[in-house]
Amino acid sequence: MAEITAAADAAWNSGAVEALREAVSAQGRHSRAKWADALSISVRPVITYWFMALYCAAKTAAFVGAVDAGVGWIPAIQAAWTDADQALWAGVLNFWFLGRVFDRVRA
Image 1 (cartoon, helix red, strand yellow):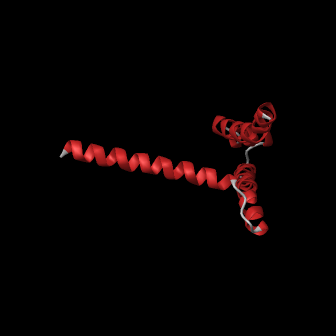
Image 2 (cartoon, one colour):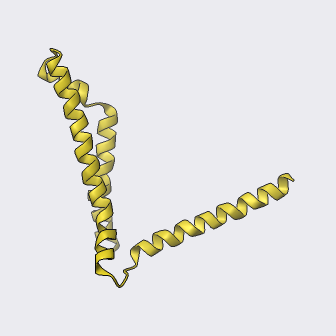
Image 3 (cartoon, one colour):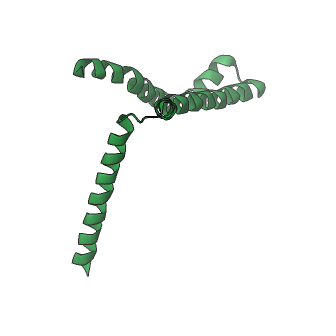
């Protein structure tokens, strides 16, 4: 039974990887509908901008809340900006700007 289950899991995983590969490949192809292509192209930037706005709003609320509670400006800024924030934004900026560098190198 364990061998049958392992074989079924391997087949399922192989199919899942192939489906993911096909989905990623299909995203790069253009359709005949310009509006659909434009929508597809806009998804990542729109989600990035939305997340950035939401994230900045949350950080601003934390900062304002700290200042309203009597914390000074500098300590409030230092408390609002953590190592996790630094890592997150480094990843976002690397994705957007280093991706362009790699695209130019490949071209």
